[in-house]
Length: 271
Image 1 (cartoon, rainbow, N blue to C red):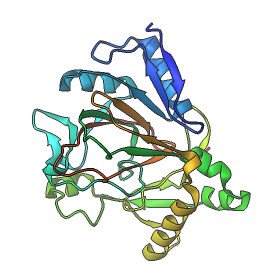
Image 2: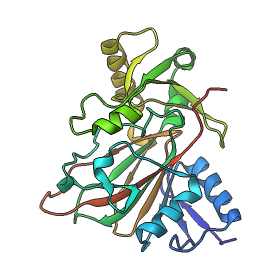
Image 3: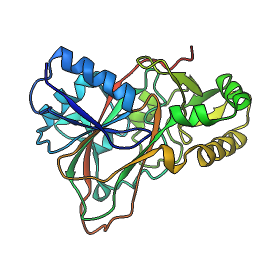
């Protein structure tokens, strides 16, 4: 087993992992240790990595089987399980708080980002601890959230989504608004405001207003880790108990290129 060194980066979440070269095969005990570290810290940072696409996919699989992404127009041509985040590819930074691909029956356990080209300033990624957000809510509101469900589909506002992706991934999926982490056993608030068509028993407009108000109230600086990118960073985000967002505050004449892999998780449930 690789000897891991794990150093917390923020009081609420986030840890830097040293002692792992992600370009090399990861043995089973190390995979288990990384899975436990992710469940505990919710965001893991590996510095100074140099990865080919094949090595990156192999490293990502330590956290689960890589799954298809439903914006296939942004996939790497020879490695379609790798998404390319690059503004010159027609993408806008995902600056709204969200958790990835909630329109899947088994949405991602983790989103894994690799910093390939990094601007000189700005362009960071923030991650919020939705486990801490849940605990901080009043008890009566936690009980209410425990009883609610969202219905999820592809974002209606995305105009460049391919028709084949709409047909493949556009059916409505039901998820609880609070889910139990399958490794850690804790509860966390769980939804994607632009993929949730509505909350059960609420109209779409009222649903969006409630989710927006929840995000505004819950996500405070004390539960947010802000990642300042360096070239060669790998950031692993636990999608089962966090939300994350990109920051578009960088010079668009410079390149910000991240590779993204998402890995399949469990069907969300509350126990």
